[in-house]
Image (tube, rainbow over all chains, first blue to last red; front, side, top):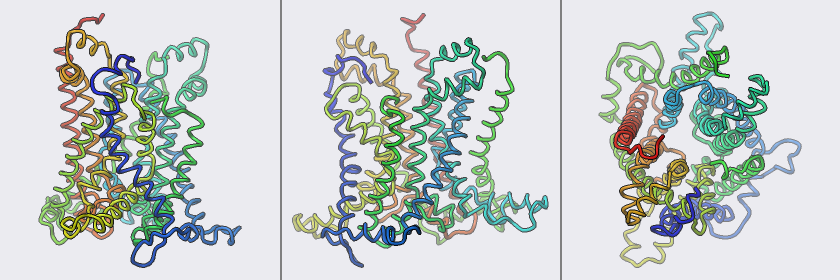
Length: 297
Length: 294
């Protein structure tokens, strides 16, 4: 962004140009988060929120978490389950995203072909997630294509039930929807690698595998970290994919909030939102130790 | 290391092909099934080919007001697109200079991408509830008496969508201005152009293709948004919210017809945007001076 200091005094001042943008985030992001924190400490009854300070929502949310040990309370169980999905989806999107980006960046030779293929990966990102989720129904349902094939080929006697509305379909949908969030930053990092470094490694006798592990992967760390942050935080806060693909049977950190909102219990919903925010920030703090994100954009 | 196509190339190309099949395959299946005959069901086989489910969908047929939701989402998407383009462009220009709070604003913008959508949506809902309470209690009677709620598609809803589209807009602007050669501006200034003329006749024409890209993000992200909309739309639902509600109740191919229709809109917008970008690039290549090029 450093375009020369003489720009500073040229045209409208920067703060003025940025003001409308900043106001939107102040009004619709920062202030709302403040309200979430405030309301999480409010009381409530069946009809409304009561603006008196109490830790009731937090106490209720963590109900039994200490007394029931070593058994896990509902809150911990939900977070362990959500974390499991995070890890599985993260590992799969990382491997698939890296491989796709690696192919695009280093094996597609013409720049036009590269951009076209990258665009092919991007287009689904601009279409509806719900439609991309329901599009698995005719494939994975009890009478879906996969079961028709399996039964037809006598691999199984009766249709397989766990293909849809199961942890499997939830993980599959996440990978289907969000691998792009890995591909884009990793591809970006790879395109910035100075090709002379790779030539040097090649001239020094590095094998393809050594090139990958000693040159490319270390230099892709920023892309890997940014992609990981996106994927992990999306899964942490998701409720729609869990709803649509999990048959409303699988608990998740995001769904807890939605359930409370469905019952119009705003303070407990806000308390759960604060807990989710805390968990998300913890993950980002860890990933941010690996790489300075700002520097890499 | 790139002499000849190696085994690795073919293995990776096959992997890429499978990934693309994985991306597009299921979508193609529901496009096909949306043309299911009148007696067909949610899965294969196709029982004839017809537009039956599209007609049923657009007649309304008892299931929610699809045409109304379609129109609402289109209006909201267009407003979000325009606001996203204008604000991102201005902020993109601002970030080329130093200004007070630039770092903070950058981190807040990125945080908006990362904070779970349901949390942002909940916060906006709470904010507008409190605004309602405040206005009912303290505003002059002629406002307070007529007020039902300040929440709505173009107040809280618009704000919710902007917290999602603007970060993408700003990132695209960063990508442009990182590569922008500021000598063009210096030249314009040396020739006596005012800051506005420089922007209008030098900067904007150069960055126009990417600005269209920002518009593309603005519209499509809004058109398909659910999580942030969920608590913030007020009385009416957007199209994707209706669609999501339908998935739990509808068991006929209506829903595929709806999916095909909304995806058609997305694809049309993508095609128009990419076409416009390609045309602009070509014009730039044709009209551009070759001065300074080797």
